[in-house]
Length: 268
Image (cartoon, rainbow, N blue to C red; front, side, top):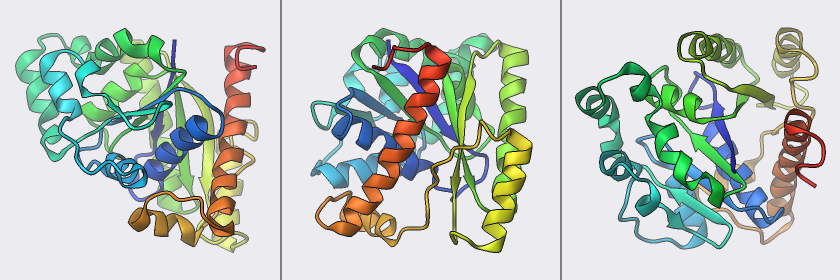
């Protein structure tokens, strides 16, 4: 059964979507794992990046179709043999209206995604969920459906506060809805590697979350990541390879942490 991971922070623009996509990409291409990316952001940026990177020119389905039909199987886009995605479109912004109109009990409203994912979990090794940076029905459903959260920490004060809020909200979901979710790690995204603000924020994060929880590998500011937004993900030159190597290291560290949580030997 797939291990399900939501990538989160309650501040926008910290790199959540890019990390979600690249974690799926490296697991599928470099570690030969069967991976599903679930795009729960109505902006659909994760869906667009994967489509652009793999030559998918037309997407005729959306996660919202799955929510309305009560099944996600028909919404899965098989991008490659190992990488599948459930795309999002702008219409998914109406999720709250749909839930309140069609799902009576509050616990069922926040657990709707979990219910829809359960029948397809056995088809994958990992499922990643990309969500908007808001306290909302989107985040509620993602948390209830996930086993772990990977918190993205951009090296600035508001991102640190967003990460703190995320931890508090995880506790709220556990207390009120019995959410069973653990933090697999806090992943730093540095704006200026070696910069005073970046290092200060990183030190504070280590004090706040604990040295064992803050990941040793970090995402440094790489111009190639911006280029991929336009060109799609490529692997043509040394700059591409450098960027991929950064995410491969992050994925490998995350897998070691998951092995610790899940039990030695499971990922060998």
